[in-house]
Image (cartoon, rainbow, N blue to C red; front, top):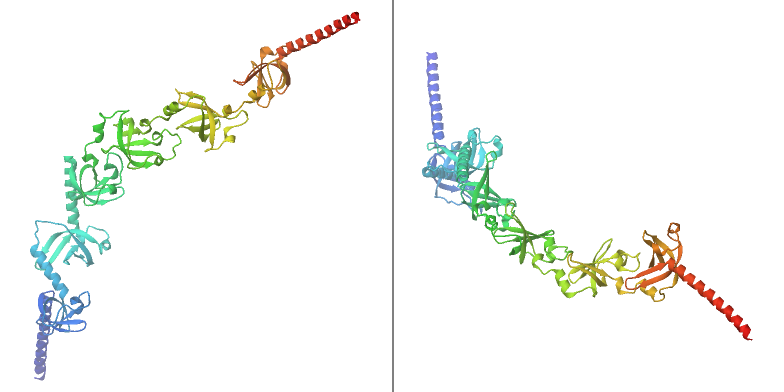
Length: 558
């Protein structure tokens, strides 16, 4: 009896325990079902860090005050306010609630209600977290989405954290209020769309409008039909590579044409100039060598300048074609950017897209101007511009004349490089004007008496002189009479002197046969010297004979 009584007591205790466990389990199931449910709660108390909200449970829900605090630290609700919350969990029978999650759930509901599956639009989300199945993402409105790992289209899962991606929706579960997104679907659809658009652009070969999205130093990225293509800086203008930043602005709509597509790199090349008529086709039959045209100096370099014809064609003006001045140091000394000038076409090749022009050809020729002002024999002043081994160039009236070493000084040992420096002003005489070669020869030594002219003042024909042999030629011998005074003894004038016995440096005696102080020439003759000596000897003999006869007669008369 006691055993049965104990058994009955034990059975009652077990039943009571099972009822308690079942009640707890039921209560827990109610709690689970209530988690994340959207509830309109009433604020019943505001404490320092916690807001107490009546959510219809035994105990008020605890809401972190930070969820209803503005940027200035002020709580945005007051006792009695009704605010949406969700239960996020229970602790000691007291529910924990969240206002922010409630707002998110509300936004998700609104998003799902407005979603149109047929639109299939792409949008941006930012990866904010991850779990075993994938990633949590948010859009700009704070709506949460789920991105499965299989739809992330990336090898390194950690690389997506904090990144903003373009995605598409692949599934919406209204019951769980979850939205599943896919980056893979967006990329696949984008590739397909790009391929279709690019193929259409290439096949149509037509001009389309594009919007400039970004300008770089090497070109511009232009949006055509939702895909970006590159307009390289060489495809902007027919005049050649240009800086796109000086011609266009981001957001500007421009005409372009698709010219190439690299399937491997998925790179679309666009062209602005291909979308315009080729200006070279217009001028190839209209412009010829020798034509005079008006151009604008567009760019100046040390070696020349580029000129703009005004129709997207650029020509080149070499530094040597800017001025008749041969000593031009830099084009900027003669022209400036933006200047409008007349030039002559000196080369045109439409096939090679090459145009060369000359500015100096339309300017007055300095040599022609020189001929109008000066003549042979004029004594002028000029500036030494260049000194070479053979002489110096002197600038006179826009041209350069040559002062040769032998015309710089009567001293044959003097050279221009020893007598002058670049920039020196010199007085010279014009001795020759070669109109065909357009060359002018100058002389400085002709402005003073030559050594022969000075020598002629103290010597005359018939004088017997002594000199030193300076040079021996086939036709005769040059004899130095004084410093820089040379005379010639022709071979036939050597008389009885054996040419083979003569050598440079030997002393020789001869007679002056003529002096030409205009042409600076002196001729000597040994043969004439012999005749003069014979004549002198006869004079002496005759003189002695006359004296002897006179003396005889004188003596007879005594």
